[in-house]
Length: 150
Picture (tube, helix red, strand yellow):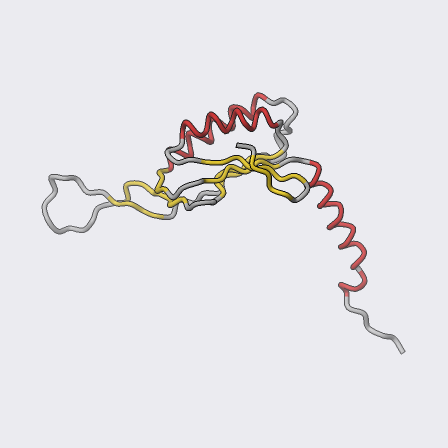
């Protein structure tokens, strides 16, 4: 009599090996998190200015491979804001979408950068904080523990 075995049971050892290899890969490289301290309504221009600054600083590091993604932006601009000219007459609607905005909450993740030295992460923090209209903190993960740098 042949007993049927579920497919996950057969490949259980392979799945466990894959999980352990991913954990070692993540634990070897430091990830820096830029997290907001206050609530604020922001425009896309602020995040775009920060993106340009970060990409410029990351370009200076030759060790980073271009194929690997080392930088993430975790902000979605989903609130549409409309505008109509001041001299327009009453009626005929609100007008077209002028710009999109995003509401940033306390302790929300704004940027995430991996595999860079700490002095460059602090330099990027100083450049970004001058561009943003709200305050941010810099955190890193070390062996699964989040440490506040600035």
